[in-house]
Length: 242
Image (cartoon, rainbow, N blue to C red; front, side):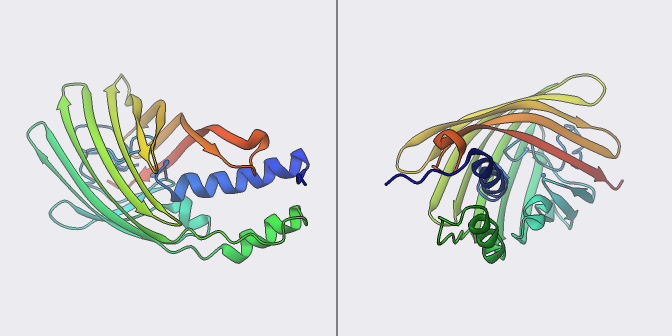
């Protein structure tokens, strides 16, 4: 017997799950400027920016407090608001045109009962819904600055309900007036490779940071209308304390 869920309810459920998974899993997923690239708070669109976080920042994708020797304590405010408190430690260094980043973060999901009650109230036919999104994430990135162009690669591993590994390349081209054009492409490895990509713009001013774009995620799950979700928006807003 096939369970038919009304379209409006499926859209509401899809939105709830999509926001959570996109932020918590490395589909994604934070702005503070480095000294040489207006890359926000050490993020591009869905990947790390190969840049040093030099100033405290309060942002949606990432809020961070620099410590010493390139270290910064950070959190994803998006995930915190979605009942997934998280805390990470990030290290970055700039050596000539070379940029190196390494970091780790742990997420402890406390919203299982809330999410379950919302989904089950929207669709009584679903008798049990228990999302488990707690776990660690580790990542590393290398970037090369070539004038207005920065090219980089990132590797990211996470373990939530299952293992996740992604390898992504990115290019960031500085335009005028603080804007940067960003393109990302790579694969996520989990029983095979699947394409991941994103494109958009990031603005980095003296204090205000903003990112707008779209990411190809290709999520396949019956909870989404049509059985899947190919693209999700990318948005970030932040303030850097200089």
